[in-house]
Length: 603
Image 1 (spheres, rainbow, N blue to C red):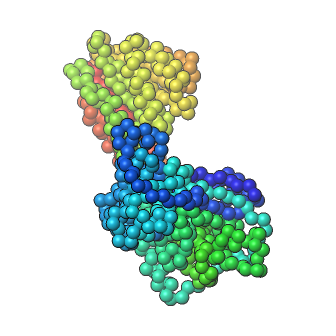
Image 2 (spheres, rainbow, N blue to C red):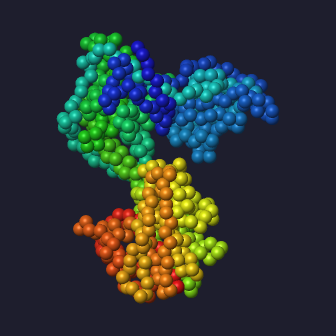
Image 3 (cartoon, one colour):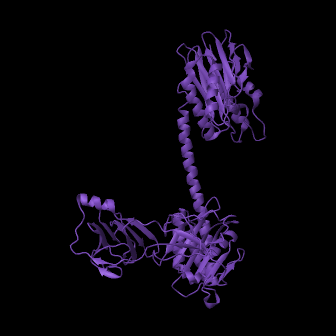
């Protein structure tokens, strides 16, 4: 019989294992596995008295600690398992909240027992508890512990390990053959419950479907099953998102850490693959003991699926090993009814988790937007000869558009508008990269074409090819009244002057967008402005490609018309008016792209 190891799993609580990758077709079963074991303690050692023991101090304590790091594995009365590492400091266990390890158990005293490090090891000492402290079933006042010793503290059983043991593991192994002691119920067969149990399900609905974390829900669900169906051992498996593996967030065993939790693979697989519920009873002489679950000590067991619509999202399992009372058809239907409520609770828990992730994402994006806004110029030129205004309105929380205004020492001013393909966080990261290289290299030349070539080389080497950038770069000389322009696949700017109410396109020889071809050339065009005041208006395609509900775009004609109404050439007023016109045109339709505008008045 080949055994397949599972990942680390903590019995009774949060650590989980995963089914091996040989579960083909969703959760197809290997031909060689049939049961799942959870292994616990490695046995029972003897108990010795400890006369004349003295505590470990100073360097002796540190040396002893370096050599040993003991651990207690504590099985609580409800089946949960707690693991606690013993340190150089004494540890008190009891019902009082002030204890180092508080235990909610009525048979445990407020301060029940103390574990103390000594030169020869660890000693357990009863603190005058009402029910006493037992070591290997013998009463003790002060006892030196050895590996595997069992310490009963009220209703909690603690197993001492001289060295930390690995967490209980889950092992898969196949049965060869079948037994008619197991009966499967089809997924579409209805549930038959008496009024008494229908009332219980009704009362449990709120408890199991209220919003809470997944693990809290499953812990609560398993406690309900142990109480109402008298499970001695139980487990819950949940499919992972890859649909090929499961994890076991809950494994509980009332028989103690040394007991084995055995789950027939056929029960598990048929629940996961077909949504069938299964009930097993000890078949006695009629079942072959070499293939029956009886060989694993199981007297009666049930397994039901957790279902979300057409999908099976997990299973719930419970069994008995010490009583001959068998589960009935009513029991399996009641178990399945509980599972249905748990499924709703799991869906709600996932919705809650998704909502938390959405809130966190929105918070992160808002923070990113705040950081991104800080990358834009904080002040723009506003003199008698040069006035600049700009707007960046992201289609999502962060923008893939970029504008910049950089004043040179000689009085000339760089003006830039760029647009990264796409929207959202990925485009915003690319924009930040461009902003960094612009700021680092803008002083290298006064030729827009040469700078675009420099930036293009950087983008081609460092950015993903799917994220190309269009860019318009202008060097404005207000004194000489000219503009040097270069374009990397960007829309040409519009030019307005007081003598002509109709905006006109500025002729610019455009190269490829940045990031397309490393050896691309970007010619520089020189534009003479004349003597009259004028305004240069740059924009990204989010302005002209704003769509309304009828599938129409704002377009160049509407942009020219919106700008024609501003003969005073006020940059700020022009940008506000265009943005208002775009918003009015789009109406209730969602903004489809980032909108950026840059207006420069010369004279």
